[in-house]
Amino acid sequence: MSDKPVRTRFAPSPTGPMHIGNLRQAVFGWLYAKHCGGQFILRIEDTDQKRFVEGSLDYIIGALRWLGLEYDEGPDVGGPYAPYIQSERLKLYQDSVQWLLDNDKAYKCFCTSERLDRVNKEKQARKEPPGYDRHCRTLTADEVAAKEAEGLPYVVRMKMPLEGTTKGHDIILGDVEFPNNTLQDAVILKSDGFPTYHLAHVVDDHYMEITHTTRGQEWLPSFPLHINIWNAFGWEMPQHAHLPLILNPNGQGKLSKRKESFDQSGQRVLIKVSEYIEAGYLSDATFNFLANIGWNFGDDKEIFTVEEAIERFDLKDVNPANAAFPVEKLDWLNGLYIREKAPEALAELLVPVVAEAGLNADPELVGKVAPVAQTRIKTLNEFIGLAGFFFEDWSKFQAPPADMLIQKKMDAAGTKRCLEASITVLEASESFEHNDLYATFKDLAQELDVKNGQLFGTLRVALTGQTISTPTFETMEILGKDESIRRLELALGQFADI
RNA sequence: GCCCCAUUCGUCUAGUGGCCUAGGACGCCGCCCUCUCAAGGCGGAAACAGGAGUUCGAGUCUCCUAUGGGGUACCA
Image (cartoon, rainbow, N blue to C red; front, side, top):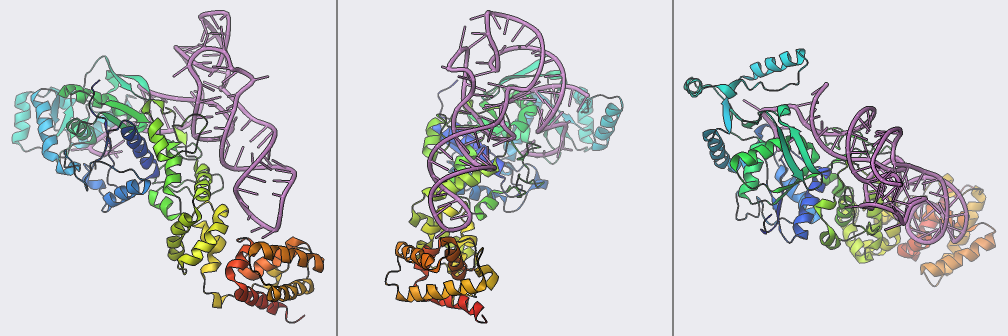
């Protein structure tokens, strides 16, 4: 092992919106680099032209920035090992492949896809494992020259060992080994001149001086291929960590953006990072949540800051087992982070949410409402459902229907009486501070011989038009005397005919 | 089919041979508080996949089976 500075990378493909499971892979790589005082690199692996999706780079960068995973080098920030986009590094891969060819570590394969299909079908018919039959591996130099002279397209395949085992070591999994007779002569350079992932990532990791790789366990089966590529070049291999996968909440299959899944309560599981942002999840809560899957802080501590996580994190402590996505825990965690925010800070986060909902996001009003909603929302967006009425046009407030105003074990006459008495009390009220209001109305309930809940419930509905809302007297205080009375009178109007 | 990885409460996890009568958290249930909904407080149910070994002693080590997951592309 060397004493070179630790360098990790996150190397997504630009195939569309960023996946939440993908973001967690980035968290672990980033955390390890930070823990070691090293560097974190963003590299774009776009060697498959067909899967390229316009705008992907923005999604990737946006997601990383949102979560606070700043990278030291990358396509938009540059760095000493630029470029950081694989399609801009083709020469390097082609030269590397040429070296392997020259040194008998790889060979050109002229087989057509038709022949490949046929070979596979025949193998299957004989109940043999599918795979390339290494037909071109034994071509003589003359034969190769002849085919090239014909202008036949070719791919380059890795010349894998035929016997023995390939042994590897993984930081999380420990020692792993694979029988070589089950390995394939994988394609490393495609006929379009682009390398495959297998070749490109090895070359890049080497030249970018990556010391520790992190990637999902779905890559484990190709680990022996990569080991053989590293060995063929004679390069010192970085340490590898195959991270556990995030499975659907029911544990069936890995979390995928291609097929939807649902949690226990029937809610669709959010997959794209942008969906989490739009739904009003906080980045620090999301970070905490993601870091807690497959890794834990220790000391029975589940709530921690980014700094604390950096301090403690180590790849070797990552749990090797795949994990069902514990979505419901994010709601709890997010609610917790919301509650712990200073009210002003929360209000600041809420202003854009209110505006986004098409409401009047007056910062002063949001500042008043935020504290009374704080313990009642798990995501920023829930603020709208609970307290959105504050930000509607007050002059357009409609009186709720009578049956909504009438509380349990009450009738229209009784409700009317409550409203009338409440208006009288409010008009006479000197203080509009919610504690005073509470005391006043508690007395009124007694006078009227109704339960607190009956009187307060009617007031709540009259004031908010909702049965679930911010607390009644806090609401009254924010609405102010005139508006409160006006709304009660509107409600009273629903009982005009009795 | 073949190869690889994994397996502790419903879920995320602690646990690296005696400290385990298995700890924490979410969720769930109950009680308290209470103007709704929350939050908060208190309490509860709930797990070492199964079988053989190794050992004085196994959740912890080995093997087998089962189950789950991943891979098996000129995709990453």
